Image (cartoon, rainbow, N blue to C red):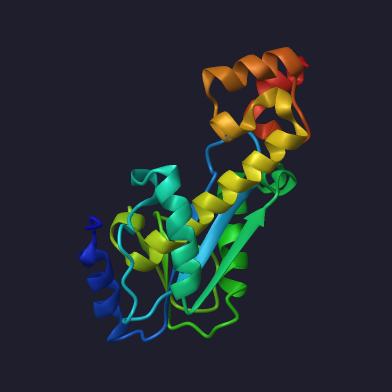
Length: 207
């Protein structure tokens, strides 16, 4: 018999809020910290009838499980949208503002009138609906946890695509984060056009 893990408290949190705010979306990002690649954000609307086994903070779930959950979230969500802010926008605006921009795009892309947006973290993007931030929200709210899955899987897939275009950097292994391997490849091959120049200013100036 298959093992079932349901983090019911995540769903209870959203259900309680829907008594006052019937249409809620959860919003989360992926890729604020890496040295390369776009930053991703996702927005997801679930309803009270939805329960998703194993749904939790994407960082606590294996890559294989995240891929399975990605398909289930898309299937069961009332609406969802994944959006990005580019490397150029990150360098122009700074990573915080670019992340807020990606979140705004994700919420706007839902095309749904919202009563409340739940934002993971401690900052709020500029939205047309009421919003509130939830610290460690992907471990608190099912909607935010679902958004974290879509954002993380989408960005990981994007980094694997970049690995095909820039195989010398091994992006599929480190997903753009500042690992020892990544810095070794930067020293060997220099900075590419998908690297965040503001994150590598010292190295960029030296090159």
